Length: 480
View (cartoon, rainbow, N blue to C red):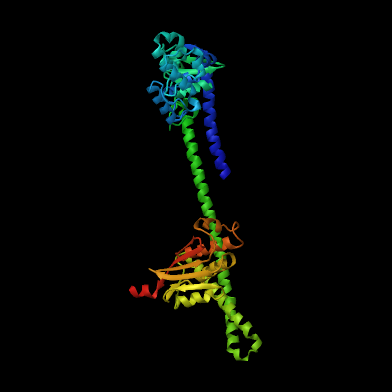
């Protein structure tokens, strides 16, 4: 199903892309038949107008190329009639030469302007400042002026077209982009020449092919982008294609949605099957467990007649029988928990119960005033036992257990001297990426605490697992 969705979406967009590509090829072929108003050589433009003298951004202060403090220092030097400290950043050596020439009325040869990279750090060309000081030298140095510092040329001249281009169009021209849109004129590159077409020529062809050609803008969708040109299909020109496109998109999302729903239904089916198996096993186990209980009860009645050597074995048999009965009841509770909250039972002494669980471990207990509480004794005991076992196996001694009942919440903290912190929690829960059995155990513990309506979290260092479980105590019952 996933592959089907992918291929359907892929071929939908592929068909649209191929259609627009074919129309662009047809547009180019038809454009070549039409006579352009002008034709310019790209090589001639770049040889006559260096990039620095084309880009509009070069008219602004060049703070990205020079240190601002060094520029301020050079400006102060110029304002003081070139008196004072002449030491500057090596990158400002040519600007310093120009500044001293202006102060001392020294003439500069034409070759210097190209050697100095044309542009003054303050923005604009050196030639503009030089011509302002020596107006009679204009004709000699005019070729070193930025195109926008020169007299406005006619719109169909090479210079006139360049002067009317924005930054993006100039950048595309320098890189030789196939299509450039500048105002009403479309530049089309063929070999090393740009043919220039007025709007009434290129738009007529675009309209015939159902193409909408415009200047690229931010946040505007384009089926095809060429330089600063955005190309889309004209709406309502080919209604069938667009309707087909919309239908396919809706179909794609419908299939994806249906696949998600089917996966969810399949997951629920598997889960229900597992719950049914657990329900059957729980039901079937009750008979042999009850039979075992009766057998134990029979032995208990004849306890005085048992040999001393069997006392320990009988004690273990009683404990195992009790644990099996608790496990069966807990499984029943777990099944009922899917329809509501887990069953709780009365616990006369919270502190005594916690002491019993901690007997098997070397744990320092810290408890508040003892109280009667209502909890799911089996599953909560299993969770605490699991966390204590993990602390003993993988933690660092000493191990501490703190318990308190506050505002209807039982809070249990299990602390060892390890270095785990809250950011390790997601990693520890991964069944096969943490220490042996640790991840799987923590996943089960967290799941069961959630079933009881509580939370489990990790803090540290030191390593601290905190369980918060809703419970009723004799205090909360008394306040009702």
